[in-house]
Image (tube, rainbow, N blue to C red):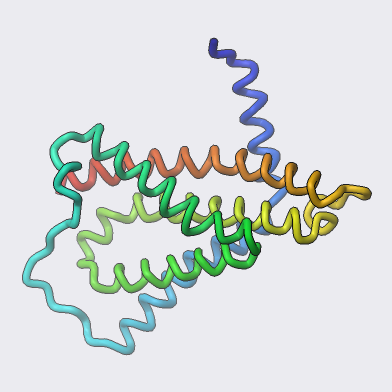
Length: 199
């Protein structure tokens, strides 16, 4: 049975984790969105502008037509593969790898945005911002867990915290951060589906 009081308390705990990692989010946001911008800018100087004879969206055939299937398909793919496997999981093994995966994704996005027509870029901008922020949260989650078992005192600043206890605490914080990852990616999937259907 759903209890509003427990939900509010849980959300407060999630927000407390985010507010305790403000510097991490600022750095990761600057890295990600900054690198997207730098790659697009470099491509403008290094290569001539691409010519367009037409544009088609690459959407799997089985997703086209049914908006609910499309939303759930995009959401599941982005949450499981793009966020967790590609961005968060490497950081759990070694914390700098989440930031490295985020930078790699920024380079790919920059390359894709360079060849995207302006009208399509503007249509996709809300989706890009939502998904990008979700990947920043995913990178923060991986970094938190990775740091927790490598350098427990640096992350939690509590004396006498063993590596196992620090890892458990880091994992709990990771789960709380993933509330925001899931929420952002779900909204992004709805916006992306609406954009695709309108185009």
